[in-house]
Length: 397
Image (cartoon, rainbow, N blue to C red):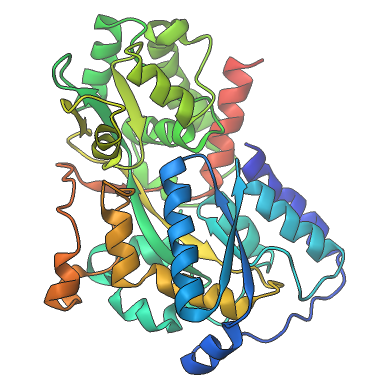
């Protein structure tokens, strides 16, 4: 919830900040000039650092952009993206217009909305002017690429991967649920063998959003900004379901894992039989690393589960804008997308259209991990705070 509450602080702080006069957006149309300006720059990429294989991938990106473009990439590992947002906000409050410490942020959802609404992102629709933007698969993922949790992106962030909520399960031990009713029945039949991370962990909150979508009669209300009756709607539809479910969860729903790492450990140790993940390739990657048996696979509700695109954004005051643009463009390159999609490396699904590539480039992409369920759009970002606040009031007070 910290990540969401920051929006209110941003609004108040920026209102009283000195006028910002950031340097103009580099002319992305003159890409040769952007690359020339980027050479010698050091890009500080603030990115979640909770998975070693993701950190390894980012390190590889750093090696590639250093060798090809003379850009030094440094990952600033975060436990919560709100940390980066807070740093940019503090600089804005001080009236800083350029030379900021944060050059690039791995971002989406409420953190993006907070920065966009308060003018803290680089403008000029730069993302849609990148040379590799032409490869983005707008036919399949256009809505998810051009809106972020219901808010228009308008070229202020560049996509680089996709996510969909699924369950990991061991087929040698259990059959997975394919609907909400089956999940509730599974929990009752296997007491203590399922759980979810405690909100505001992004995976835990994502699971709560999925349950709310399943239980609200008029789902369209979730795709508009949360109104004054939003908390009452969550209390009326989500909380009764959770009260039915929690007594059958791990530790009777009185204690929850504190993040993805805790959840993975419980699953790998056999304490739970289902583990939520936002990456359908997580099972294959864990099998490759010897962390899970080769009988582990993923499944989803047959009617669909929520998914989204994750992005990189450049703050308005970034000190090395040209270098950040070069990194963002490289992340959309066929080479970078293919490597990221490989379950042996990361397994994060691509956002580019492989059919647009040359045969040799397309051949580098691994066979996709298929999820036989539709991807449902995320509710509007404003619902995140409401869901987390009501959950806290109900289960932590």
